[in-house]
Length: 239
Ligand code: C5P
Image (cartoon, rainbow, N blue to C red; front, side, top):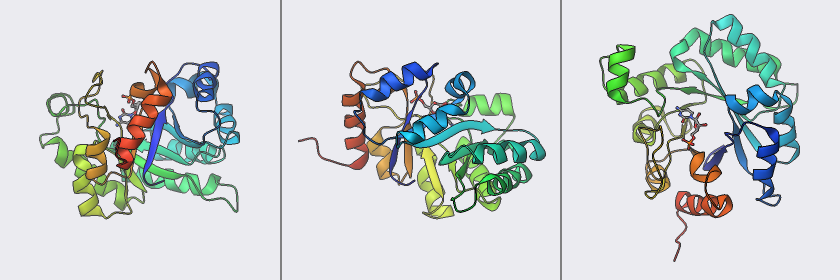
């Protein structure tokens, strides 16, 4: 789970996904299935990816009453995803229910999927958080607070931006996962992301794993782009 480069498979159909993955010629990857793909293709997409030896982060960001999240997670645990998530804003009771649901649904003899909590979306700016969520503190304080509540509720880690990951790591320990989207090479377009960072910055901040979507999926040569980002993330010299 640590030091992974997770590719966000933000495609609308299974056909597009497998066309994209075919370019990697059998390489075992860590991929993320989000709402777009899951809502079109359903649970079968998870087992198909697992059959091809990919690790899967099922990014459905659950946020509902504890009982509903418990039941949903019980079902998701049977699908074989390696990593799932919830919104920390759902509260500690909901997060505890998520873990209990995963434990109840994991087939015996298998490890339950890791579960992380989204703190503040990387597309949210501090101004937006203050104006729309009426949270008067800095975004860093809000993320750190959510991370500490998530840890206290039994979560395995959080989704945050690279900018908060170092502090989370020093306050909550290196075993608490920090998974950061919003990764861009300095030459990439920002798109809708606001709190972005390069793979090098993420590595130096001690991030556990990075999530990269459009800089790879929409590149003219996705495999070359994946390799460049992976080398920067792993600290391999390009010269
Ligand atoms: O294309 P891009 O690299 O921006 O993709 C980032 C991925 O990470 C998207 O699938 C998005 O849903 C997801 N994500 C995010 N911010 C979060 C949690 C997940 O961008 N806080």
